[in-house]
Image 1 (tube, rainbow, N blue to C red):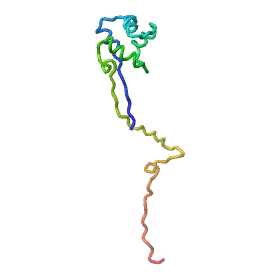
Image 2 (cartoon, rainbow, N blue to C red; image 1 turned 90 degrees about the horizontal axis):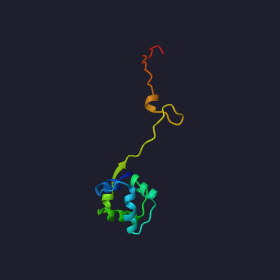
Image 3 (spheres, rainbow, N blue to C red; image 1 turned 180 degrees about the vertical axis):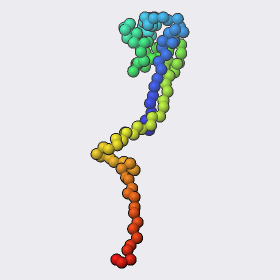
Length: 115
């Protein structure tokens, strides 16, 4: 069974708690921790859910906001049921037997005694 994992990125919320209103407010705190990112990179980091992130950036953000990493990103995982392909009625490769079968009414004839 497959599992679907989804995550929520909480940097924008944590910035609001710290009184940071603009993604540029992160430039200097990140530089203090040895991370140099352009303003556009930081804007994407704040405004979008990152597909991947450097571990050093992740822990630096946790340090800046004074939170644990699990407060920066939370996730949910759900089991996925295998999707069965839909059957096409009347296709050449498969005929549903119960729908194709029609019983024929039987007639019982009594045997002639002469024969």
